[in-house]
Length: 259
Image (tube, rainbow, N blue to C red; front, top):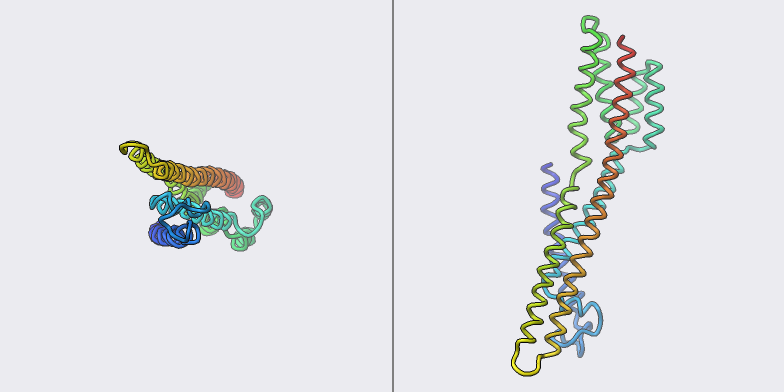
């Protein structure tokens, strides 16, 4: 969890720097404006985005963080599943255990790796230590194996859910920052309307444009964050279900072996 905090802190700083560079030197490139002057009207969408105001920097920061967390989750959940298909691995484990080949099953876990394999391996290693103990009754042995599995699950499950709350938070924050930018843009528009005489059309349209760009960027980050959060939440739920199923079958087989 400490590593996750450091990663998030570094990500925030890097995302802010990248967003500022994009805003200042890509959106704010002189060629995006009439007569190559950033004070003039924009000639393309990049220039129009620059006129959206500095709040876009924070909105881009949120979007970059959402994309980065999503990539991190894809890689982490891929590792959590292990090297081969989980269904094939679990079938091999069941067959090997039913034949009483505990060492072979542990070796299967070593080859598979991932959260499910690690949890099964912890339970098998505890069972292997207890199987030779003639004084301990079968029920006590089963409890010890179950305890080892629960300890392993306590270590693995938080890793599966890591950064999911960050994605959900970023989705909400993106909407709020976008709303702030929208309000700022609308304030500028009303200020242009409030001037004496004929309202300045350029200032009025600039304010409306700023409001709409902030709304668009805010919604973009929120949509990405919400989709990513729900997608990975479903993936974690699927892996958790397979873990529960695998450990249940493991305990059932061990219960038969210890009778």
